[in-house]
Length: 159
Image 1 (cartoon, rainbow, N blue to C red):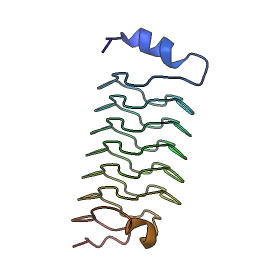
Image 2 (cartoon, rainbow, N blue to C red; image 1 turned 135 degrees about the vertical axis):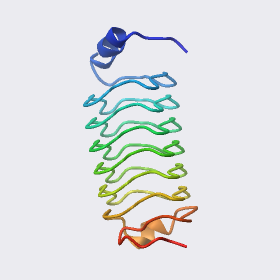
Image 3 (spheres, rainbow, N blue to C red; image 1 turned 45 degrees about the horizontal axis):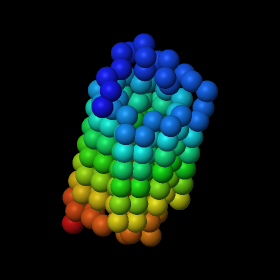
Image 4 (spheres, rainbow, N blue to C red; image 1 turned 180 degrees about the vertical axis):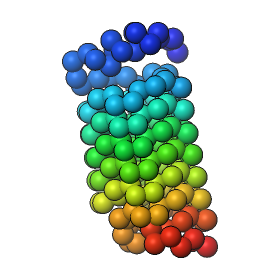
């Protein structure tokens, strides 16, 4: 993978949209408030990235590594996150309405007060995730592959 300086990343992310950044390594970067709507980040390494307040509406993050990423208040409406690794990610107050999280790994993710309206959680791993205060309906949650240890929207721990 190519190494980019902070300046090169800034220039890259401020190019005319849409951006095609499949398999790029941005791990550990501070990308707070970045505008990535419609961007293609398939298989990108975004582990430990600070994406607080990022706007990623309609972004394609299929298979991306977002392990331990900070996505507090991020706008991920209609984002494609199929098969993404979101283990330990902080998604508090994120807007994931209509996002595709099928087959995503959300083990230990913090989703407190996230908007999960119409989200697809088919075969997602929600082991030990915290869904306190989310608006995810039971029929969507029950499509998940695992809810072991998950704190449900009502604050009760799933067995």
